[in-house]
Each structure stands twice: as C-alpha cells, then as structure tokens.
Length: 304
Image (cartoon, rainbow, N blue to C red):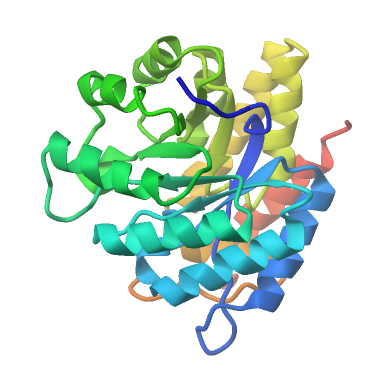
C-alpha cells in the first residue's frame, strides 16, 4: 500500500508534446509558454517525457532539461509526473533521482524495452528506479509499444512496494482498468491512458486521465470530467463522442505527433515539429485545416 497522499493525482493530465526550437533542440521557452497556458485553462497536471513527449528519442540531458524547466515554471501550480523509463536501468535511475531532486510530484516508467525481459527483470528494473527517488511511482502499462502487458501476478507483487502509488494503463481493456483499481484499492491511483475511452475508463474505476491528444483540446476533456463529476453521463458521452471524432481524424494523418504539434502551434504556441523518424503534418496537409476548424467549433460550444 502506498505511503503517500495521492489526492493530487486526480483529474486531467496533459501528456506534454516536448517542444523543440527551429533547429530541433528542446526549447525551454516553449515549454514554459505551453505549460502556463495549460495551467491557465485549469489542467490538473502534466506528464513529461512519455510516449507523446518522445521521451525515448531524447538524450538523458534533454530529458533532464524538460523536467527542470517544467517544474520550475508550473511545479507549484500543477501536479507534474516525469516519465523516466529507458532501455537501460542506469539511465532510468539517473533520471528518477534527478526528477526527485527537481521537485517532481511523481515519476513513472514503462518496463525496460526492446529486449522483452521476463517479469523478474521488470520488477528489479522498477525497484531500482523507486530506490532512487522517494516520491510516488506510477507504473506505465502500454503493451502496444513495449510488447508486455502487465500481469496481475506482477501487479500484485509491485503493490508490496510502498512507493508504488498508481498506474497509467494505456490498454484498451476496460476490464483490466477495473481490476487494477479494485486490487489496488482506494488510495491507489489509476490513470486512464487511451484518450478514446476516457469516459469508459472513469466509469470502470479510473481516477484520472493522461492523454496525448488532451494537449490539442484540453477544454473538451476538462468538460468530460466536469460532466462525470456532476453525474451527467449523457453529456459526458456526447463530448467523448466529439473527442473521438477528432481523435479518429488525428490518427489518420502520417504522424499523430506531427498533427498534434501543428494544432498546438496554431492554438497556443510554436512547439516545433516532432523528432525524426516521426513526420511533420503541416496545416496544408489534406484535411488538417478541416480537423482544426472542427475542433475549434466544438470547443466554442462549451458553455461552462
């Protein structure tokens, strides 16, 4: 059972698209600007250097820069979780210690990737990360990218570590989300990962959501969350359907991250293009302008 107060880990968390400058370098200025805008809109927190943040495409020093800048700018206004997962345990440990010393509210990690290790190896990898930072640890389960779907056997073992405070479950399995919450207990935080099923995840026990498309349309996901809390599930479903219509279009482009960055640039601030091998998707790309205009039309319908 977690030894930490997890009350700050509920609500809407934007998975930060790591901002770059015109030369493809991490841009502290753009990080500060986009973070301020999300905070102003009422976003609960941010998840840095995860899948959406292209974390595994960044160097260790770049990842440290993202965490430092984000925490310095909004660490006192938002709940910041830093993803420290990396192929090498030593790099994850270094990133975890750094995030802790910078004031991160929590750290998170995927299993060690590429080599498809067994569960004993994954447990030791996560344990080493937790040993480096006395802050909440959020397991990151994203089987479609790591090739490993967290078993209930390993999940129960991980709950024996008192720094394990939650899980970001980016599996489309709502039953699994419910099981993680039921077994984890009241103070264990379950983050819904798939943006397309935020409402379903919340109904099945998730306490919060972390999403990559949230950054393009945070107002819509904040609206869904308000409807859930008001128990207005008909309106929540309506707004989830609208979000899903937009997500379906965003994932149809050559690069989801490229499409999202173009919309964020148009709406908020210039955060550059995605890092190769991901492709840019300019506003001139067929359909992009229409997707953007539809998004803005839906956002304009939000009255509260």
